[in-house]
Length: 442
Image 1 (cartoon, one colour):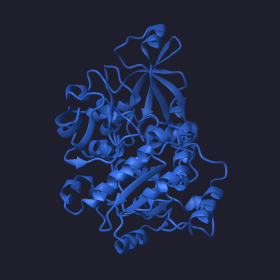
Image 2 (spheres, helix red, strand yellow):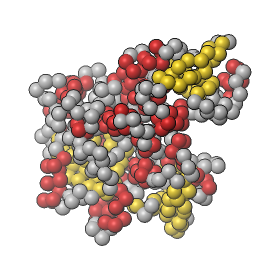
Image 3 (cartoon, helix red, strand yellow):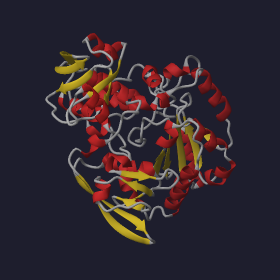
Image 4 (cartoon, one colour):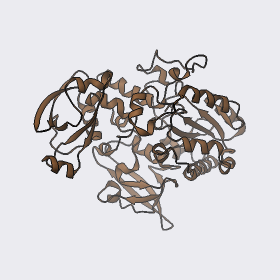
């Protein structure tokens, strides 16, 4: 989130509280102020000043390492502590100009494009602004106690290798760069404009003045939604994990395959466990986040060219992405999904019933059967409740969908096809009754 990814998830704290990995410290204001007091005069880290970091890189010839950290967020706290304190990382970090950013207010959105739902991310640049690569860990995001840094170290070492080869390798880095953004900074996006300034309010309530990273993604989606446009699929399913195409990659390596799901895109491409990606779409990889970036920018139907190292040899592989492949992305644990649940479901959280639960309820295995796990209570998240939906209802018919569907796929389906103000008839099973309720699109 935001600069720090950013500094936390205050803005959607209610949502964060509902998602374990988005939990925050009790004294969020104190955490931010203590971080500043500890870090602003640190010998290694430039605090909350990206421009100064690039200026220092131009003087020294070092690459710029920008850590975006949500200080109050408990996710990634173990990794953050290790990056700041682990002695074994020090020799590697000394080779960078290190910048710590804790808020997203003034981020250059054309340059800083990454997974806004993470509470700790790293982007590494040349002094001229060319991006070498991204790092972000969902392993650490979901486990605050995770402290392993070997994957982080390998990402930094791979970036240093790219730096040594620069500018001869500039062409191979073209696909890593951020694309055009409709707004220059987060505080220009309509949902955030007027509520936040470019600078943090250190003289008042810092927390209320901070744009958190997850708010950037949420504001972009609201921008399209409020304009009556379909929310782009890459905004609904940002930075797809390798698992979306059937790959599991080792968190302690740059991009080493640990498992391939049978029947998946990856399996059809002939990938195997222990394959190690050298490049994807001609881009050299430094981390799993780099792999996710290629998927993020991929067309809806494409063939991605890869090179993997297998038994000491480099082997070309083609990954064929079919139509609607993004719908397989699991977004259920993303904090940014909370606002999309309000848009598409009126604040409900839905879970696809497994086969055993369907059998016990007399429901078929191959049709819609989404359990209402929770119903929001406040604001737009209370719209479903006001429409009559209740916890433990089972949605069995919605928008003419005939086959089995996950919550994530249904979010994309509805946000692509329906605008604010529309109302959809939805059939639910409640006990022994079948009811039809009107679900408002927001």
